[in-house]
Image (tube, rainbow, N blue to C red; front, side):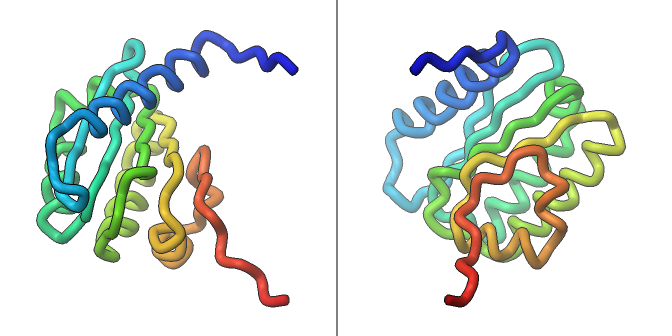
Amino acid sequence: MTVSIGQEQRRRLEATLGVLAEVASTPAREDEPVIAIRSFGAGRLALALAGAVDVGVVERLRALLDEQLVRQLSAVELVIDLSEVRSCEPGLARLLDRVRIRRLAEGCRVELCNPSEALGVGLDRATSTGAFTVYDAVRRRAPG
């Protein structure tokens, strides 16, 4: 079976894979936090977060996402890949929700990719996760 994807989807996928490759090639301990970014077109930015995310990392991520240059580079779309996050503090879910609200008001599409189950629970508490364009987290299992 062959699946055809559009040019925008291909560029988004290439950028996401690129930032994940950058994360993987960064010499760091397994739990050391890493933030990698890559543009994939005019106004489109992919960001990957990896390692253990503590309060300090959340603050650095907030500052990065508030920078005017980063906001310009992601004026149309911001893809945040969380597949390599090993652990995180609850403030990450709140930050992602605030970023989503602010960026949507600015006309930016915000997409989350592969948040962990623990982060997914935090996002469920912080916001209506349906508001994110893509949300691949493993949902809490329904009883039964």
